[in-house]
Length: 432
Image 1 (tube, rainbow, N blue to C red):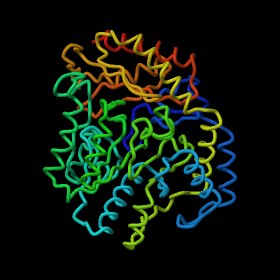
Image 2: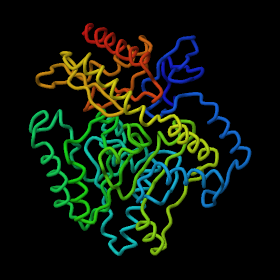
Image 3: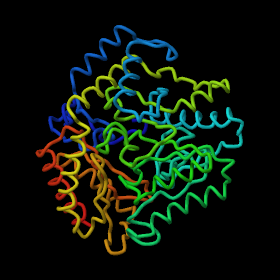
Image 4: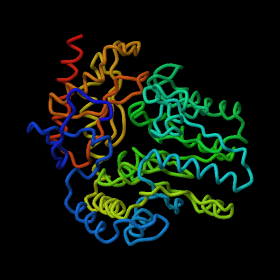
């Protein structure tokens, strides 16, 4: 690490759903790296196609076609993307992809003769990347620390958070409350100034697998359409099976104008993310004389080959369906074990993206003081009990323990995770 750590973890190899450390111990990767590994670690057939592609086309200018790029686009269009998303633009990271999507949205409005529409709306709990732009667009205070003066700023609407809705937990009017936040912000900023809303279908690690209430997304889309504002669905975390559907927008019946997909696209075997859009947007850019600028390592042939093989494996082994069924099984086990725990406010999430929110007082939802470092202690205890859980939250929203395991896990891994969580809660909270 750039900032040295006292005892950095040394992972010697990975296989299946496990990390094998230098000291000989074995850790269940319940975080799937950083919630991206879907097909499991160490799949030889993915390694083989990477090697073949590297030998065939080590580097080809991103503007040109290669067999690997063509195969990936065909796989995506035939089996994964919503039918209306027919155009692809590839990047290396999710940060780059979200920034590219925003630039495409702004250029789209310029090309149509509405250059004033340049402001991007985002949400109060969110994470869209680590660049100056995407970091600024993110509702994640901990990752802005020390950078507040240089990050881009933009208007934010409230992220739906049913447990902590200001009207009250799970309030029947919560949906109206969060829709009002969107409409009020549009009225204040002016629809003529807004290019797009950039948002995750289900709030990822910043809030911890928070799903919006009821018909939230259908109402959001109606408002955006009425105001000529594009919807950019950030599916870097929720795409490619993570929620038990092909894409997160499928789960919520969304029809985004632009979709950003990343982590699960290659299951961590290569650095590749994509921005997927409509013919209407691409045609407008062409008529306006615009073309999204590529990054040097965009759509590297070996990355495209890896992604294509990963997507084929997901289909061949029905792993998206497995993420849905095994995820539901795991969620029910977590509810059975922890729903009545005095310090677990909620078990939530969908598919293989689940979370527990830990609080000091369940009745008032009062969190533990940040100085007590509950998330960090739970994370450390998890390792001692053989499981790597993912720490969620933003600092202000805190003590979120997430599970985003590979889709290949089974009963053995579910038992291990539940047993480890019980031990962690007892160990960490019992020592306070």
